[in-house]
Length: 224
Image 1 (cartoon, rainbow, N blue to C red):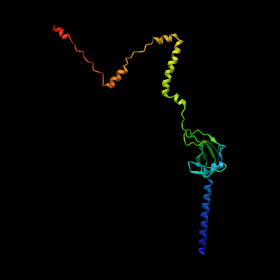
Image 2: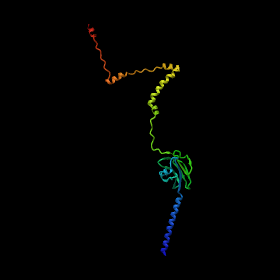
Image 3: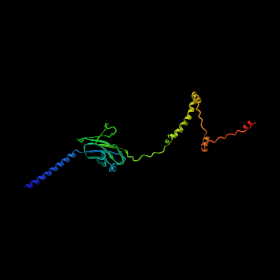
Image 4: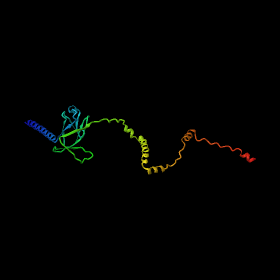
């Protein structure tokens, strides 16, 4: 009789523990929510093929979801908090979106503004993420253009003085006073060395020594 009561007590405790665990699980799942949305691709792209390699990341992989063939997604078992939703793929670039989930399950989506966090731009929910364009992994190689040569510093240094020399006389021809002033202007004289003499001195080891002329006839005349 005593053994029967013990078995009944143990079975009752087991059932009670299982019920409390199930109740705690239901409470935990009731506080978890789902993030839903849709992805907009260009008309030329088939979503059924693209969705196989795409993933939805919340907070850089803290929660991960898959994209369905109709370009919709759903990330389950997400607790309340603030999350950054990103679409990870290799073909297109998407703008990340910030989602705030309250303890009661209310969703609020807004643009992610890192430089201006106080600037709130709300977005509709469920989410709708549109691609900004194709992902570019390589920079386009620069091509040679004629304008690059024309606007180079060396060409400008040669062309601008030439243009000034051609245009300035025509401008002074119509203004006699300016022409008279230009004629009266005198450039300072600068004694420039002879280039031939400089080269001869440089390669010849210096200027040739000057020979002194011998004085003849002076002493004989004095003796006379």
